[in-house]
Length: 150
Image (cartoon, rainbow, N blue to C red; front, side, top):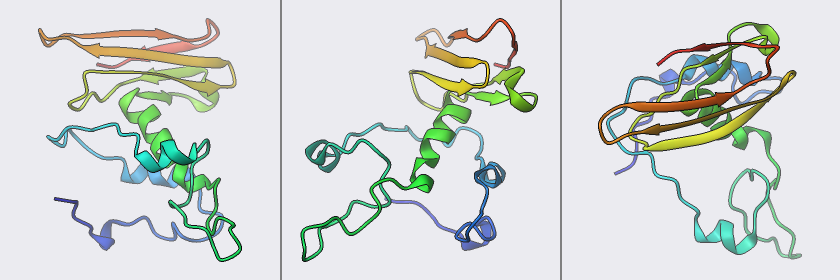
């Protein structure tokens, strides 16, 4: 159980100030990993009603205050990867004038979501059917060109 970790594959200087999130693009995985992605809503998240991405699940210090950042930018990376990989929404040209939609379905049966762009929301919804076909619906500004890659 668990995952393998190879420090040689880390993006250099990811832990330094001014590291650009776009540099994580180089670690974008892969073909279908052959395992199911499972969405969970852990009891701790429900119990403390988290509404931001936390650095870690913290404990309280001696004075009763949380001892970690409760709004931490790097913890939002899964949202980026779910939007750009599972939904497949990425800019095909700078500024999202041309939008590429190329979902990676892995073993999921469906996904749905939106990405804000300078031209408004781009929404994608897809479903894997039992017969092996894939239904995709999308909505984007009429000012944008959409490239659909299946």
